Image 1 (cartoon, each protein chain N blue to C red):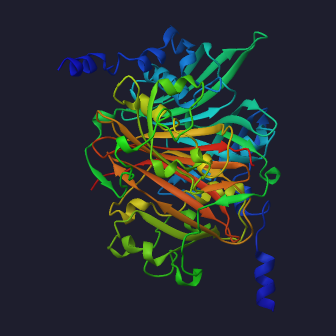
Image 2: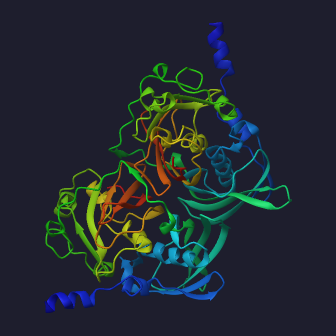
Length: 286
Length: 286
């Protein structure tokens, strides 16, 4: 009993969690926001692209009359580093059902020049105002129970080294997409996992922007290694996620010419397809 | 012999065709272009979204140091009408391999106000500079030979009415995705067709931007009718298409909350996956 109570008491909630604090912006002026990017969301010294998309997504939610990103596209221009950043937003159009906005995140380089890191174009709406119809042919990915999946500390998967982001995420990979970690990539371009925030905070539309870009790249299962930098990432948020862990399935169909696409589907505990994403990324060919 | 010679003589070529003339812009100033949108690319009085994306794509190809749209995202704000339009571009970043730009198309409304129709964010590169590797698990869609497929004038498909764009396109639909036209939609959210330009011009990266948004909407095979306006469309051009007709396969997995996603794959005559796209569109629920 005591143990259970402890777990419940320490469970972070939407609005009061590390993810919320670390994506919070300070409004400097109309449409202009400051943030000090923490070191906790980095991989190999670069700030994670999904986390950054959540930061920009929150800035646009403040700048636009609608609160939920229905479709958001980011072009990653230069690698973001921990430290001060400024986000500038631009309201493109406001409508009754949808509004469209643009945002950019800048950092100042060592020479004192402002460098644009990411540019985002997005249309926002109100997920809670959508009708409840579902006519979908999509089915949730088949992932074994979470107890049978593997995280960075569970053995067969390699230690994630010094990537601070690993401490903030609960990622449990489907063993059938873990071949790369054992030196035997499947060649199939698939990656599946249970996903949550390590402090137990439930998912919301902004953490979905993080979820789509948090798994190891499918390129690993295609037998490639190394950095797979995102050129462009588009996320459609289709439904407010139910409480509980998410299932994320990523697939790559076409690796060609040094680029690949990576499609993600995110399913919630109520078996609803809550987000779909696609990114174009560069690969270093072996 | 004479007949063959006639056909060859009348075959339009890349750079000298109706599509090229109708997407050509006049440079007014650095990064600013004029175009008179012709009535020939309209459906139900609105100018087709794929054609407009090709116009914006050509403007960015002129404004940026790279010529080919690797990934281009458009948000459709208001319906474009035939008549004068101005395109304003903005160079976001130029790099060795990729450059990023933004463009908007504006028209002047009856009250004399400039109205933004579309905003585009894109990264460009050089398709011919890419290595020739292909490690793809994608396979071309199974479509019967073009002689066994159906266009607007071939019978079972409904006459396309007065949509002028139908005269500019060669679209031959796979009979197995034609149920909607016979009052018996499959419910499967799939649409497949052979695609080309009616004057025989071969495909290039800009006509691929048209190809992904030219088929009847998958919503028809899901039993819905009426307008399916695009909110956002992202196209990845992965390879310069070989001469000859294209195969286009469109699928929808998730129709929910009055929105659907529509994924397109475009394959060339050399069996290469030359473009992938995804759009978020609104549906009117029956």
